[in-house]
Image (cartoon, rainbow, N blue to C red):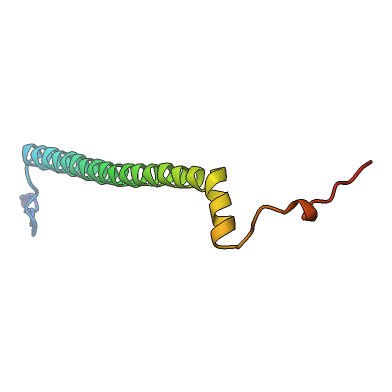
Length: 106
């Protein structure tokens, strides 16, 4: 009787599989990179928002200054002496003479 020898089939690997330790290091580095990128992105967002807030605050201060200036101008324009002066000089209005006054009785 002939004895047959069974030999294991040799493994042919086109791409060598990395060791488990190397995979863990690669995964750790990928996670570290992702966290770092998220941190940098969040800081850039924060800086952008702070810039926007600063810009809006300066516009608000400018608008408040303009409101104060306009209120002061409106108060000066409402003065009775100024209104009378404009009425006399620009509109030619004078105080009525006694003959122009008409009294109405009820």
